[in-house]
Structures are given as structure tokens and as C-alpha cells.
Image (cartoon, rainbow, N blue to C red):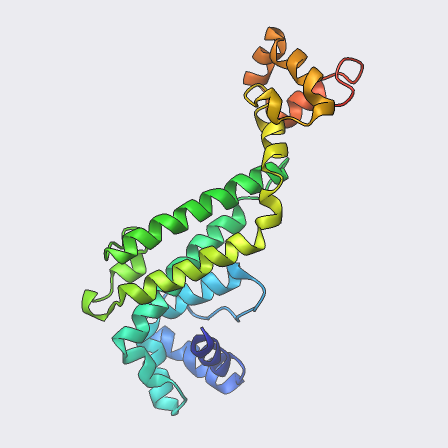
Amino acid sequence: MYIVVKVVNSILSHSLNHRQFQLLLEKVNEHYIDLLFFCEVRWLSRGAMLSRVCDLKQEISNFLHQKKLPYADKFFDPRWFACLALLTDISTHLNALNLKPQGKEVLVTDMYCHIIAFEVKLRLWETQLADSQFAHCPRLAACDPDTIDPDTCVSVVSSLRQDFASRFKGVKVLAGDFKLFTAPFDVAVNDVPIPLQMEIIELQCNEELKAKFRTSSPLSFFRDYLHSDKFPKL
């Protein structure tokens, strides 16, 4: 990642290099007339930038050679480029994850589900990459198989999964509370906090409310149908 950032910034930070690179792309009729400037804290910028760098591999390498800029040879190193392809695929998946919580009435329970789903996906990718299966990593799949080190791929994904587990371990403690909100008719009464148990029993035995829940979102159900006079604690 460090090398890619240095290359992009070396092109964009000098106006002459930037203009000359634009002219080069125009000559080869590339769709990308510019690169995104990398922003360290935004995965969306990172993912888009990596995708463009992969698409412009040949043009960037030629330009770096022509201008005698560092790292030109890296783009001709198939093993290095395979690592870049994997990083790009992972960033693309992270972009998709980042976009999921956007929109109206997105709740913390929705975000929690997306996080858990992504961790499950990471475990799947670990298993598949160990067996040299790249179905969910299209850019990596396009690389020469002989240039791909499965152990390195697994290590990268495993590190990401462990990082996710560490970052969100505090949220997982609330899994029981989330289920009480998203599936109140399915929770076991013994798993519910004691002050709420009587009201949960009343709720789960109410067929009318059960029918309402089937056709409502959890937010609208608790807001519109659970009246405080009957369910003050819920």
C-alpha cells in the first residue's frame, strides 16, 4: 500500500507530472483521465484509487520509467502485482461494507448484522484462498496462478478478520440486546433481563402483535405498536 500511495502522490503532487500523465492517458484513450488522491482515513478513496492503479498498470509503469521516478519496476513484478490485486479486491469489499449503513432509518442492529456477515465472509475467503480459489477476488483471479502465494493471501485476510474481531468485540457483547429488538418473539425468556421477562411473555403470547411484527420493521413496531402503558419497560 505504501508504494502505491507514494506513486500516486508523486504523480499528483507535481503539476508538471500530473499534466504529462493526463496527456499520456489521452494518447492511449484510457477512460481514467485522472487518479484519485489518496486519503488515509477513507476506505472509499483507497478502494477507488487502488482500482484505478490496477487498471492503469501499464501506463503508470511506462510513465514512471519515462520520468525516472521510483518504483517503476514494481509494476512489472508479477508477485508484487498479485499482492496489489488482493489488496484491491479486499478494499472493494470494504467499500461495499462501508456503503451498507448509509440511508434512512439505518440502526445499530443493521450495522451489527453487516459486521457479523463480513466476518463470516472473511472466514470463507481464508478457506478458499488456502485452496487457491479466487472466486470472490476477481483481480487476484486474473493474475498468473504461479505468482500468487496462497499463504500470504490467507495471512492478509486472517489479519483483517482478527482486526475486525478486536475492533468490534465491545459491540458483540450487546448481541443479546440486539436480538431482543430485532426478534422479540424468538428470544428465550430466560435469556432476557429479569426486569423485562414478564413483558416479553405478554408480548410473545399476543397474536395480534405477532402479526404486526411480521409486517413491520423493528423500529416501526416498537414505535407504533408497543404502547408505553402496556409495555413500559420494553
